[in-house]
Image 1 (cartoon, rainbow, N blue to C red):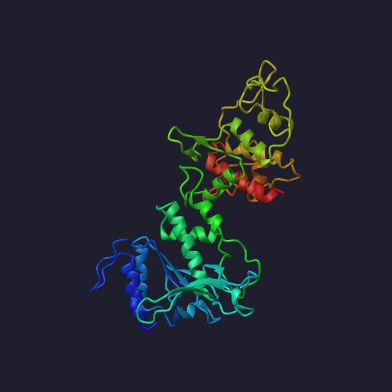
Image 2 (cartoon, helix red, strand yellow):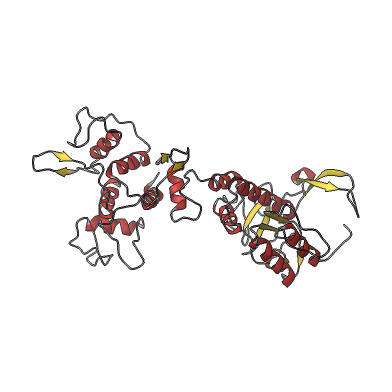
Length: 394
């Protein structure tokens, strides 16, 4: 209230994160989240950037209001500093509030209020009547990106409470990736969308103990759990694991596809279509369903019976065939020139592999190979399933 300098704020950031400030004792409880509901039209000063870098280096998430001048956030400090989560304000309709700064630096939007039509359009905020020392506490309705930023800071705090191992960069990524589209409009830019605390929290504590945030195909494996396609394993210590690098066997693959279909009503035959799949097999229903759809006919053995080989790993060439048939064997003419250097046109399932690549479900490796006889790991299977659903799902 009595005024001050941005250098005071820089010192405050350093002290909050556990750093040393002359004349002050060390903070006994260093912050994991620092909210900066403040700013001014200026470039990011050297001292402010150094303070932010120090805090982030100590594991603190630094959240900054975008500013209330209806200009680019790139003109407002500390929003224009590196390593901060920049928050713009949305109104009650889910559009950018008329006062909120905008632009490419905005990382996420959150409710900031709009009191134009009355004070209750604002955000209930904490106040204090003191001018030079603490006074009486009270509440009132306010509007501004200073009201939006604490929504994000509070969500960041919940994320860290749920998973203290998260880094500031991971927290920011979770906030962005779980944001939902703005119900209204924003021009010219307001980041990836509106803060969704519930979706962020669901991501912070993954359902599988062996699928840490940031691992390849992380989103796809979480999607498998959310859709009920994979429930993983319950370990002796009570945790649930996904075993992402384990090969997918043909019995589990049948279960994945059956669940991807929505677990349709199906009564399997009393006699198994495969000599090596007893009706008591845990996945008998799913394997029989796969056969009934023509997705897998198994192998014809020398004695005239058919086998499914349920515990055999699924190779990448067979995976392409499964998905092509699951899609209904659509009309497709494979190119004369192979799409992958290790899949010549004489390869079994050449058509199916080419089709899979044409849909974008599998792009292979950067060196131009598909590796058709390599077993499919469970993490890659999640990616296949998610991309298939994105392409052909209802």
